[in-house]
Image 1 (tube, one colour):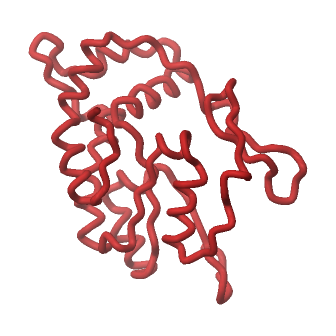
Image 2 (image 1 turned 30 degrees about the horizontal axis):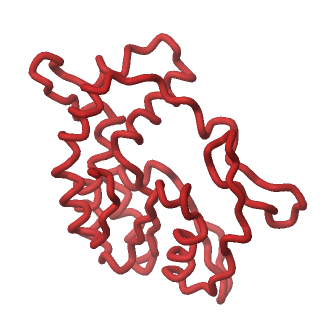
Length: 204
């Protein structure tokens, strides 16, 4: 981590931290006071998105449906597949709570980052003890990408949108498989809502 002067906040992001077993102990050893921000989204959508990204790099991988199940006939979900495993948020959070109190962890809704980016970033600014500077006027919705974009990036006169790897069209997944996954994740989601004190609405 770079040196941080008084009055500065140093941020670092790595998508795999939340699901890496050794990460909480290592970060705790680095600093007990670290504030953690975790962006989560509907675990079913997240699994399909994960698969879509892999598919773009390896077009010959098996279908989503075949990777989802250990046994398609019995409907037994393969929890060893990382795309499924990552969405069991309650299990990963248990690991973090052995080192950090909930007051030091903020969960950001991936869905609300799309529908209300300023509102979610308002929560982030409050959590970090920052003055609320980012508001609705900083965003516009890009219909092509399906995501909000920053009207003007810092130090630039151009708008800033997410890169070409974001907003890919998802493949059509068998609705029965999607429903099986919804049923699988439901109890984990309910536990996660209880742990965080926030209902993310993935089971509506």
